[in-house]
Length: 200
Length: 234
Image (cartoon, rainbow over the protein chains, first blue to last red):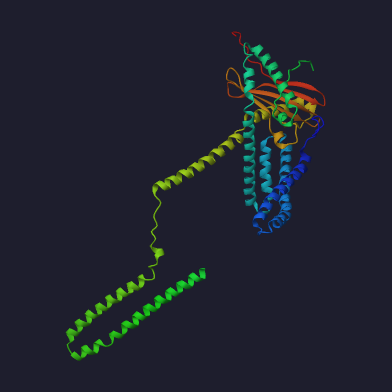
C-alpha cells in the first residue's frame, strides 16, 4: 500500500494476489473440512492418523481448485474494468458468470450456459448482500449531519454558505479522527472543498 | 433378501397348484361308479333327473372349492390395510406452508433485484458524473483520455467498487445525493466531488461537479454549478 500519488493501477498485479489469496482460503478451508471428515470416517483408535492422511491428500487439491477459480475471476474482473473504465458491482457479476461458464466449457455449451447463469446469480447475491450491508451500516451515520444541516436556513445565501462551512468543518474533524484506522477511512465521506475562484 | 422373498412366493404358488390338482383327482373318482348302478335299475327318466341334480350339485361344489382355493393365496394381512386419503384441512395447511416458502423466496429475490437491477442512487449519480468527466476536454487534456473511475484508493475490490455517498433531503422535500470518487488517467489522477438532486421534472440535475486534479499538477475545475432561475418577485 503506497501513497495515493505513487500507487499504480492494481489490475495486472491483483490477479496474482487473488490467486495466492484464493489458494490460501481453499487450502485452509479444505484442511479444516477434510480433517473433520477424516476424523468422522476413521475407525476408533486411528482417527487422528486417518484425519491427517485425509488432509494431506485433499487439501492441496481443494486449494488448487480455489486458486484456479480465483485467478480466472480476477482476470475477467480486470478485463471488465479495462473495457468499461469504471468499477462497480456489475464487473464482479459478469466476471463470476464468465468464470463459471469458462470452467464448464469442456462439458458442452448447455452445461457451460447453466454454470455461467449459476455463477452470475451467486455473485449477484454476494454483491447484493454487500450493498445492503453497506447501506445498513451507513444508515446510522447521516442522523447528526441532518441535524447540523437544519440550523442555517434563514436565507438562501446564508444557508448555502453555512452549509458549505459547517459541512466542511464537520467532515474535516471526521477525517482527522478517522485517519487513525483504515476501516474508518473507508467509511468516511469527504465534504466538497471550498472552491478557490482563482483565474486559471 | 429379495431372493428369499421370491423363493417364498414360489413355494406358496407350488402349494396352491398341488391343492388344485388333488381336488381334480378326488372329483374324478366318484363320477365312474354311479352310471352302472342306474343302468342296472333300468328307469331312464328317474336316472336322467338324478344325474342332472348330481351334476348341479357337483358344479356348485366345484365353484365353492374354486372360490375357497382362489381366496386362500390372497388373504395375506398386508392386502387388508386401508389407505385413508389426506383430509382437506391437512392438504390446505401443506399448501399454506408451500406458499409461505415461495413468499420468502420472492421477497429475497425482490430485495436482490431492487438493489441491483434498479440501481442504487449513488451508482446512478456516479455513472452520470463519470460520463460527464470522461467527455470533458479540460479533464482529458490534464490526465489523458481513458479515464477510470473507482470509489476508494485501495487494492481491495469491494472497497474500490463502493462509492462513498450521502443522501439528504432539503427543506423543500427535494432529495440530494452527494458522492465522492477517484478518477485516474494515463497521465494523472484526481478526486471528484459531485452532488445531484431530483428536479421537478423527475430528472437528476447537478448541483455541483468539482474535479480536484492532484497529478501531474494540482488544479481544481468546476464543471457544473447549479444556478436557480431568477424571478424578480422574490
